Amino acid sequence: GITILGLEGNVMGGPDASLLNELLHKLVKEGNKKIVLDLASVKLMNSSGLGMLIAALTTMRNASGDLKIAAASKKIENLFIITKLTNLFENHKTVKKAVESYI
Image 1 (cartoon, rainbow, N blue to C red):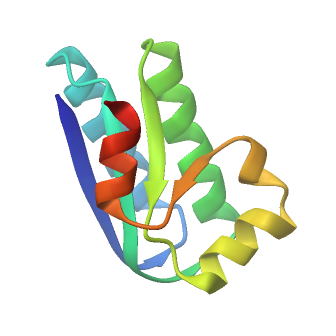
Image 2 (image 1 turned 180 degrees about the horizontal axis):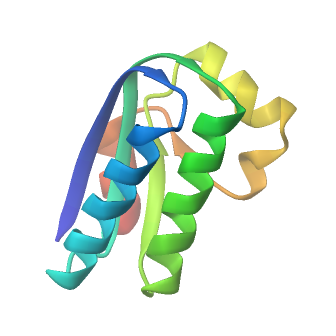
């Protein structure tokens, strides 16, 4: 009942935001409301990318679900700290730990 989605490369919002939003709505319709976003392969993220993640979290919480972050690089983790989003997102060192946090 837990879906793991991996993001890769540069997360800059734009068309990627629409794709992620569509995918999350499809997953919710199918009854998948526990999401882990694997950020291990994300190299760079800007403010639009952060907005994309906030929108994704909002989508899941509005559907009585949740979205957790996993395996973010130190650089991405620092971005969450600087923007004070550590209070909003549950961030785990590994995908395994993120999955276990749902159990």
